Amino acid sequence: MQANPTLSITLFGITFKNPVWVASGTFGYGLEAREIYDVSKLGAVVTKGISLRPRLGNEPPRIVETPCGMLNSIGLQNPGVEKFLKELYPEIEKIDTHFIANVFGETEEEYVEVCLALEDAPKIVAYELNVSCPNVKKGGIVFGHDPAVLGNLVENTKKRIKKPLLVKLSPNVTDVTEFAKVCIDSGADGLVLINTLLGMRINIYKERPELSTKTGGLSGPAILPIAVRMIWQTYERYGSAVPIIGVGGITTHEDALEHIYAGASAVQVGTANFYDPLSPLKVIEGIGSFMKEKNIEKFTQLVGRAHRLDIKG
Image (cartoon, rainbow, N blue to C red; front, side, top):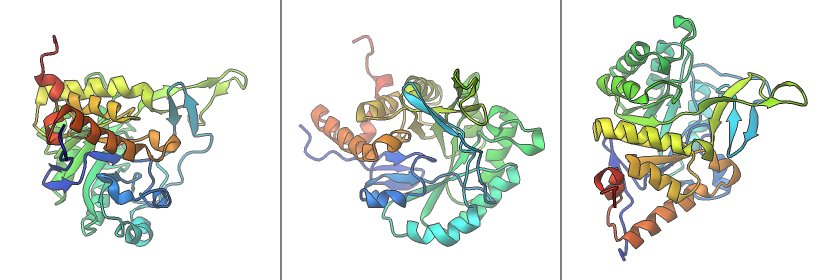
């Protein structure tokens, strides 16, 4: 049994103490959880989405439970990048782990402006572009649903910034690998798979949709097999062209390892934070124990492992 397996990883030139991060929109800005545990134990915190200007979000109801998950239509509520830097960032600086800013906008220019505003904030080590947002200049089409629009966004953002650029891909497309290729060709440093799936619930007693916006993003254990499948396909097609960060349905270390064996170099715990705030720490501990049992010395030996082993047994 391996005594002290190495969980640290180096991705896009940055060393993370472990491969377990928390997903955007499920952990605030990493500040509230300080009352529960030492947030510095996490590999990284991906912030709640940050936009150029403050957003109030959608009208309630905007969260509803579903079998094995939840639907949300929060509407990307946030204080805007200026207030983030002034009021939240000083507290973030006190936490000894990396932060990745989830960034979004209504136009390509807004994405770039938010990133540029964060360039001089050293605690923010990278950007995660949320491309599941409508482009108002293109008639409202979602950035991540149009290859040409997505490619332009990634390329034009990348050439204006110095920090690594990750792209969080939408699963609500015909072939996610085609959009992965667009991002790789446009200079993305990493891919995050996957964002939420579009879903809906109807209250048959009130005879109306449960959410004020009718539809919302489905997350939680229900989407685990879809996320694993999309990571597998992307890794199988593009191998190690860029690191893949797996997110979707991770509750346990076994779930996380499915992502990793499929090809993820790191993972993000999302919806599980709502009902078990300690779940990211349990995932970290579980991966370490698993490596000891399997006598695996380095975490990187697990990445894409299912592609290398004889699946016929």
